[in-house]
Figure: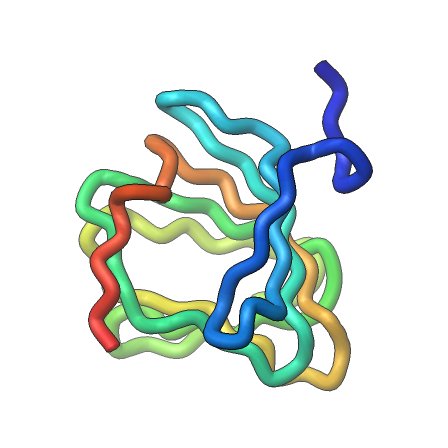
Length: 115
């Protein structure tokens, strides 16, 4: 099946439910989601016990904190996060942040929130 934001399952997330996600692939072993974070949004510090993730920035700039290090990831760049690493993504810019997140296995149900 061909999926896009027009026909993929959609959900909202974040403290004010103002971030969006579209499931482009959702199986028992793999997940790919296109996400949008408005300016000033941030997810809570967390980690995954089994899941590894790759974030690929489509537009905007993402700020990541992974363990004790900070990273700025730009359009066309990606970052790989291994299981067990405490992390969050944040949009400090004045434009929407759009990215793909690929999780193996899927991250839903494997998230330990720390804050």
